[in-house]
Length: 218
Image 1 (cartoon, rainbow, N blue to C red):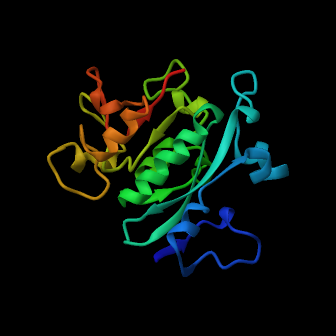
Image 2: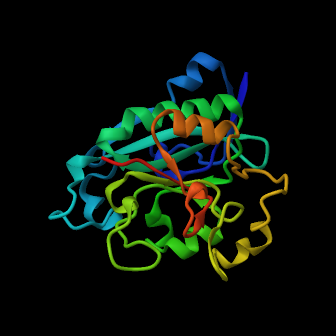
Image 3: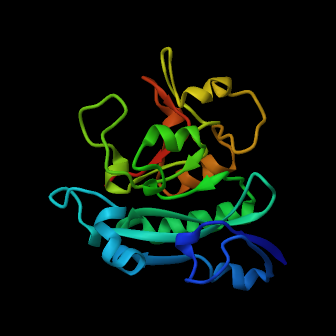
């Protein structure tokens, strides 16, 4: 039996207590992994909750995923993310594997919970995918703007370029020899899971290191 802690109100039906601990079997937990259209999830609130430029990417090109994940508190949580429709089923499978691996993810919330602020999301160690924004250095759009990138536990897997560390509260985790919850290292189980599906890890880059970041090119 797996303990599930339902901590995200947007994922629950109206009237259900969002802070309820209950027990379900493994077969039932797999049914909790779902892919929805954004219209199904957000309805009339879609444009407010998920801002984007339809000349770049449309709502029909994105999908809302509901997944289970192992938390830092030792409980199982319901999480959510938005990804490109091209990778939706694949990402769902990856998160099923992360769940079965008991890989700890502290938080998994859509970016509207942070007003679209990548900085606030990272500081809160929130894992995420779609966010219509530019790359950290500015200029071109990030792969997050297409739902083709995923950041995992960004505080303990920071972005590092020379003296710049993001989030700023991730400075203590620049040393990658540490053993802390949620850390990603080259050739570990998380690395192998993503790369086996054709995703690239930002920790392999040479001009900078983005240890939280996995992306897929199309």
